[in-house]
Image (cartoon, rainbow, N blue to C red; front, side, top):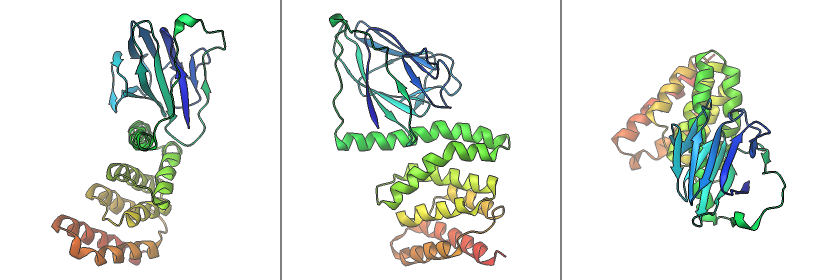
Length: 281
């Protein structure tokens, strides 16, 4: 879901507080999270000491940071893309895209008459190719932010809270996989690694099933870091879908001739998981 935001010269605050020009109903956003400042054809974003920080193109910023057209600013689970700067005395243009499927409340600037000297221009729709690329980047960046929150919850023994934080994003990746959409390896690895961690922490075999299904759809062996997590999870979880594990291993065995030595070794480790699944009471 995309929203066009209008930035006149001056400050444009973002946060959960209703006093902000952009008010976000998002638990990852602080009351006054960040502020955009537009002056003399320059747009600067500043982190106002937020709990989860501000990311520009995937990198966390400290204090004030000058943004250029095309830069992606992640605030909580909301991504803002600076689309265009028209020149001096002209405001910036932002395209905002929700980083998760759940609805995000966007409060626009107060509905006041806009003076002509504000010179505000609206943004057109993105092309399908650019929108798809932004969607992939958005989900990867979103996992970085959500993952840090979930890791803290897991460290404090709050498995249910970590599961709530990640569940929507994990479901989105699985849905994309089931619909035959491209799931980049980096995104698949992030999603399945967290799913395996949740399996260990919650004891739910469904998160193991999730991981197996993702890589079965990709028709690739899971990477070593995910397999390591799965071995830990198998010792903690209850029932897993043995049939799903067996089908995945059979598919990998059928592709062995096309795999190199590294992937063949991964297949051997996954066969060990199959034995564990079969021997479970």
